[in-house]
Amino acid sequence: MKLGFWEILVILVVALLVIGPDKLPYYTKKLGVALKEFRKVSESVTKEMRESVIDPLEEASAPLREAVEPITELKKDIEGSFKSVERDFNNIGKPKKNSPKQPQEEPNTAETAVQTAEETPAAAADTEPVAEKVKEE
Image (cartoon, rainbow, N blue to C red; front, side, top):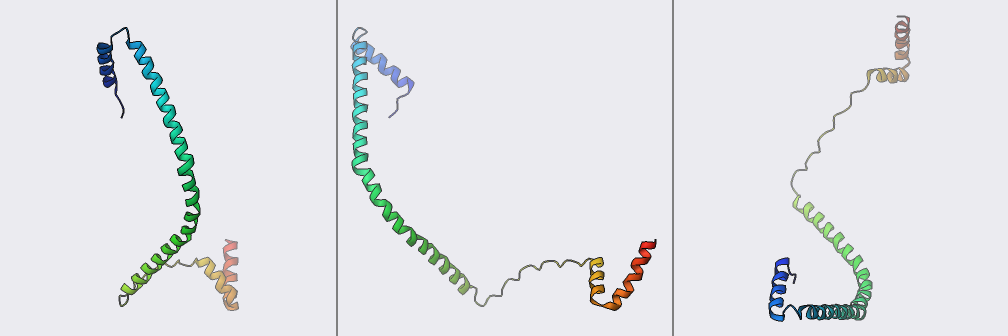
């Protein structure tokens, strides 16, 4: 529970009216000491609970988590395989979707001429004079 500014102000005004201005500093000091002692006790109880209950439970549960991890991975693999089989079973008798054909690259004409010239000696004889004519120009 959090108190806002106005709630604290109302409490102080009521305390001032009930206790009086003479005794108010004395009681506020006692209240401060009591709150400090309460926090100290609650922190020590929390620390003891953590040390005696929570930490041993976490230490005991760590090996169990490690033992369960392969089982969960196996479960995921089995579920994936089951879904794959189910999908394949549902697709029985349905036509397969054709993947879009990739456009074929047009061969480079200069590279093609060199390749064919290398492959056939007659074509090589025809291309040599053309290459000489191009060089002369």
